[in-house]
Amino acid sequence: MKFGKVDNPAEIDFTLPPDAPANKRILTNAKGGGKPEICIGCAKWNKTDLKSFYPKGVKDELGYYATQFNSIELNATFYNNFPVETIEGWYNKTSEGFKFFPKLHQGISHWKRLKDAKEPTDVYLDGISHLQEKLGMLFLQLPDNFGPKNWEALKAYLEQWPSGFPLALELRHTAWYDGSFDNTEFYEVLERNNITHIITDSAGRRDLLHMHLTTPTAFIRYNGANVDSDYTRLDDWFERIKIWVAEGIERIYFFVHQNHEEASPLLSAYLIQKFNDELGMNLKVPAHPTNTGQIKLL
Image (cartoon, rainbow, N blue to C red):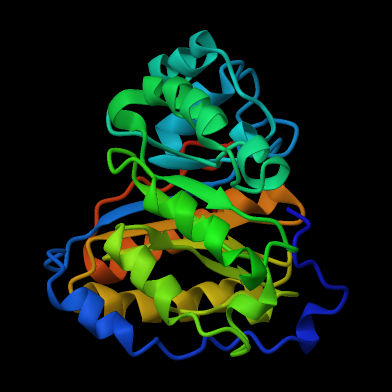
């Protein structure tokens, strides 16, 4: 994931901004009770990108990945509309309880730019629905040049979204968040339609780090910089998540990206271990590929 890559990450202020005032209201009626659903994973299972993660001889990469993680952020569906047989294969290769979080196809978000997009959306949903109960939450990522001038198209699309498919939204145009656009109605639409607001944490795009929940779900896309501070950044995230857990948040979806994806399982495992050690969760910690123990953490 090259999005937001910088040459000198040591010069970036990675401080997490304060919560939006609306978060307490959003979480007031949440029902997490200190034990939210937690999904932590990587963005892909491809052995080329995660070559040090797989033990020698593994051929079914997805099948092995699903023995180590409980979820995956599925970026491949952005580039291809896969045949039903492929999607059913993903379902059959993964264990009970595993969750997929697929990105909507680029034909919807980038080519159609949400206009006259009902037909490609229906085609996409007809296919991805074959993940059945393993379908976690879909996410719609809009291009960098999709700004507030496109608000009416975004609003119309979100208002028509079928409620049976949980949806999260990622925006990448700075004007949604820099105060130049009155986003009051935007947040109202997300809340009214139960659409989760993705929090994007990337070194070179601090302008997108909004910390504004719109549902009792935190969907976080974390892009590390392949430096030691990736771990201290995760420490900061965990402290914020602990607050949300205490306030009753129902779901935490946290997906780790790297410019060099080999480090993604290590970072994910580090965060999983913190959930187990400090919040009493019982999440699988991915195994180290060279032995039967767990991934060595920094």
